[in-house]
Length: 240
Image (cartoon, rainbow, N blue to C red; front, side, top):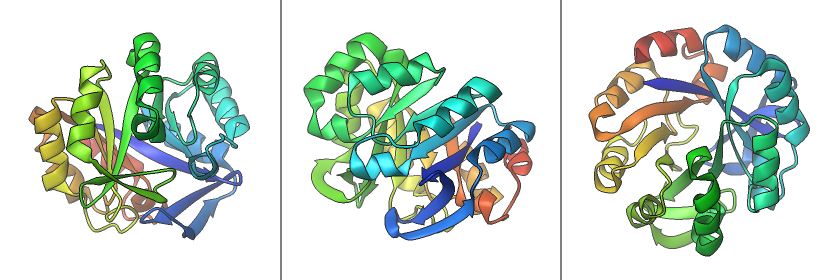
């Protein structure tokens, strides 16, 4: 199982939110470049970077930090947050981003998503962020009636192979991921799933590993590393 350490950017700083609420923000580091370098030194194969300012506003705002990390450190980067047009997507690929996560447009602009999938499917993942099985968009601020599993099946039909699944209620709580829903999403969609939200101890990784045959092949870890619940190196070794 692949471990993706997370860098959430807000106003150029590394932060974490609790349950996606921007009022519940904690700044952990003011130098995202140094954080990324540390993750690479610890053995990260890919880093998950989110532009929170972009997720909330719909316009990417921290790209200069992402560009520097990509061009100077050259890690594999999975990036999301405010990517809602083809021009931004093309720019991200030009600066070396390995995978771009789209979220809001999957719900609000399905025709645009289909168009992007015809050109860029192998570079795309869809972020499905849900509360009680219903998808939330625009930085988790807008609740919808869209069913997470139904959306995942629609994504599979247009040729995109990966979903980043976050249970919003678990995110930032360090109380463990939503194993049951993660497994159900994987089994019913037949997509590759990256689990996100709630990982707080090494045994959570061990539990997610039991879902590998269902298609859950990776997980994103943020707060647990920043809060020193365990090290990135320990997480990577547990996941092997």
